Every structure is written in C-alpha cells, then in structure tokens.
Length: 245
Image (cartoon, rainbow, N blue to C red; front, side, top):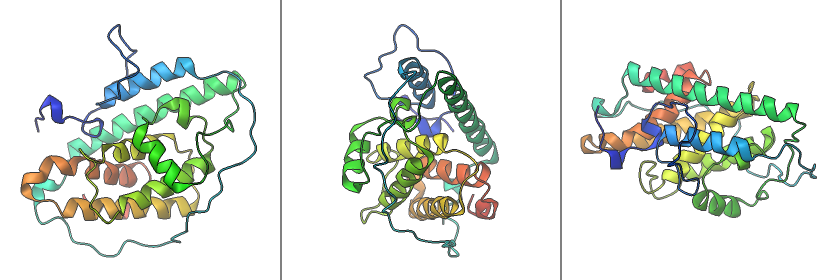
C-alpha cells in the first residue's frame, strides 16, 4: 500500500537504522521510524556515563485490572482494515531491531557505570505524566532513566489513556500516544511479570475496539492500531489474539 509523505508516521514505516546526517535537527520531532532511530543514535551520544542514584519516587498507584481476559470481540466489518502477513512480519522485524539497539545502548551504559535509577522526569501523578508525554518526544535520554517498574507504570497509564471517552486517533490527533506506546514497548525489559501481560492485553483490546470502529475510508488510520496489536501478538507472545489480525 502506498502512502503520501505527509501521511506517513513512524507506525507505518520499517525501522532502518542509520546515523544522523548533516541535515539532522534534534529539535524536530521524528515523523518516521527511521527518524526515531536517528534520534536514538543522537541521544545515545548525549546520555551521561555516570548519574547520581535517587530515592524511589514513582509508586505503582494506578489501579490493577488483574488478569482480565479479552472478551470475545468480532473482527472488523471491513477486511481492508486488517494487516497483511507481510506487513506484520516487517513491523515485527523493525521493532526487534529497535529493541536490539536499546539493549546494546544499555550494555554500553552499564559498562560505563550508568545508574538506571536516575531521577525520572515526573512522579506518579498521572496528569503530570500525560502533560509531559503530550509535550515531549519519547527520547532515550528520558526512557533510559526509567527502571522496569517505572516503565510498567507508564505502560499502565498509556493503557488508560487509550480508553478515553473520546475515541483515540493514533495516526493524527493522538499521535503522541502512539509514539509513547511504541517507545515504551521497545524499552521494556524481558521477561515480564504476569500483571504486565494483563496490561498488554488491555492495550490490545482497546486497539482492536478502536480499529473495528473505523470505516473503509479510514483504512490508513487502522495502521497504528494494527501495529500495536501485531507487536503484542508476535513479540510479547499473546498468540491467542492473532485471530484479530
């Protein structure tokens, strides 16, 4: 499927890794997966080798939905909203490439005595987190400062924001939410605790519902939802949800 340049977003692109070139502007937000990885490479050079240890500020105060299973939901009424197997495989490959890059950066920072418990940008205040995520890009200089428990908290908040009363539009109006979802998934440490899989399944359910509500004319808007569902199925081993792809 072809897409106009101004409609392309990082959710639609394969992630090709290359170093920033002379025209790279770190102040501009990334618009494609390639640009996101260029920002990652740029941030890699700026992350401190040594930082001070902090006391724990972020506490898991978001309500736990427990091991809630997906209720039976129909496939979208329009088959054109479903991704092709080739598209799914390409997105999975791109995502795994990004995860490998993050793992390599973590190993390098650890070798330089980087302390991952560095001060995060915010506390457990959900409203402050949402304001931060709306106004900032999900750069590694932020995400590498977050511990696994911090990332789990952020993932839970992202899941809740997907369930807003006004339907979320990850392609245009709420593109910030899609970017933070993708980046948080990239940075999660494996293996995951069981409750994190519950959060992932809640995210998948929200994406399935939002995608299923689209019309044939909205086929391009289905891509970011299909991307998140694909990653939860193929990377985070929730294979029973493959029926929705």
